Image 1 (spheres, rainbow, N blue to C red):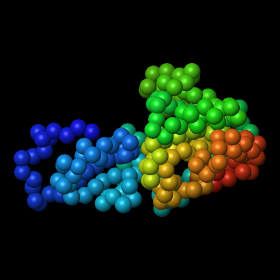
Image 2 (cartoon, helix red, strand yellow):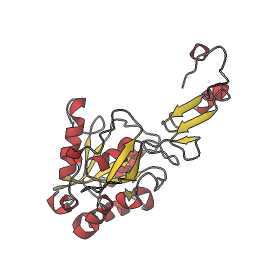
Image 3 (tube, helix red, strand yellow):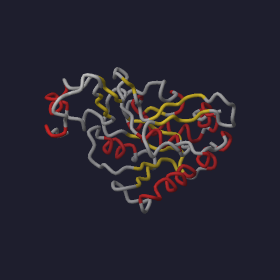
Image 4 (tube, rainbow, N blue to C red):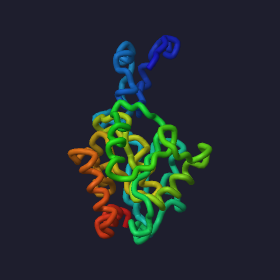
Length: 238
C-alpha cells in the first residue's frame, strides 16, 4: 500500500466521518505503511467481524417469498450482484455425483500464495485427480469474458471445486467459495474460519479440518461415491 499526502484533504471535515474500506487480506494490506494515516479514519468497513461495518464478499439471507430455491446472495461487490442469477440455479435433485465424470477442479491465477496452497494441491493431486485451470495449470477457459460459462460447464462435470485462499486469515474469504456455490458446485475450502452468518457450515467441505492432503483426498473420494452424503451438502438450498 502506498499513501501520498496529496490524496487527502488539507483539512479534515468534522461533520463527515472518514471510513477505511478494505477487502484485502493482511498479507496484501501493509499495516506498517498505513499507520501514518490511520488516525485520520473514524470507522472501518472490512471483512473482519470486529470492523465498524462488517462487509464480507457475500451474505446468505432467506427470502421472505417462497420460491423453488429460497436462498440468495446479497453481495457487496459490483459486478457480482447476479451471483445467483436464475440461469445458475439447479434443482436440488440435479446435484448428483452420479452424473459427474470428474473429481476436482481448481481455477487459479496466483501461483505463489502466502498460504502455500499450491503445495497443498500438489500433494492432494497424488491421491485424487485435480484439473487446474488458469495461469497455474494446463487447462484454459479462453478469454476472460467466457470464464463464467467455463466454470458453469465445469460445475456440471466436476464433483468438487477447490476454494483455496491465498492467505489464511480470520474472517477473510474472497469470491472463491462464493463462486463455487454460484455455479452449483461443492466447494472444498482452504482458508481462515468462516462465520456461519456468511455461509452455512453444511454448504462446503473444510480442508483445514483434515490432518493431511491424503486424508482430505480419501474423504472426497468417499463423498463422491456416496450419493446420499454428497447430496446432503446441497440441502441448504431447499
